[in-house]
Amino acid sequence: MSDTIKKLGEAELEIMQVMWDAGEAVSSNYILEQLKGRRKWQLSTLMTSLARLADKGFVRCDRSTGSNLYSFLIPEREYKAGASRHFLERLYDNSIQNMIACLYDSREIKRSDVKELREFLDQIEAEHDQKEHTGEEDV
Image (cartoon, rainbow, N blue to C red; front, side, top):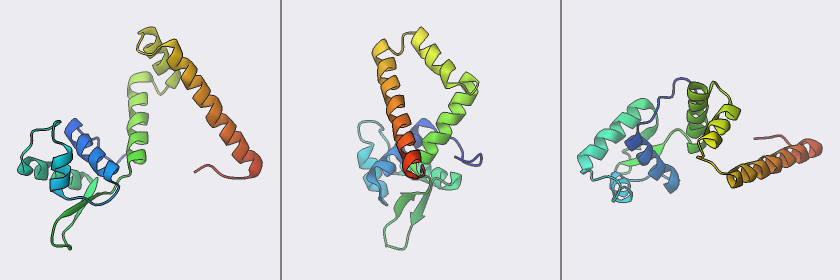
């Protein structure tokens, strides 16, 4: 995520999650329907949020089809990677070790979580080593 990408508020993130999950352009009514139970919004409230997301460069509206279709401009993975990096820098002095230690010390994660994380890291390291050995590049 580049420095020019702005932070999403909680409601904006929920809208983006609906769009990312859909994987294709969606109507405002589709978004409103998906947010039922989480947000008690009128269509006008959603439209205001979509306009803000467009101003921030997160979505675009295609009006050429006769009905407004909204699509994301920032992929989910790109946004989450940048937001995670910013979070880590701001709260943990850019140290994932500090973050894990804090979570472990406050009992937010258990030994089983640590074991699962260790296995996951071993797995991705093995995959990386295999790609290096075969000459493939990481994406």
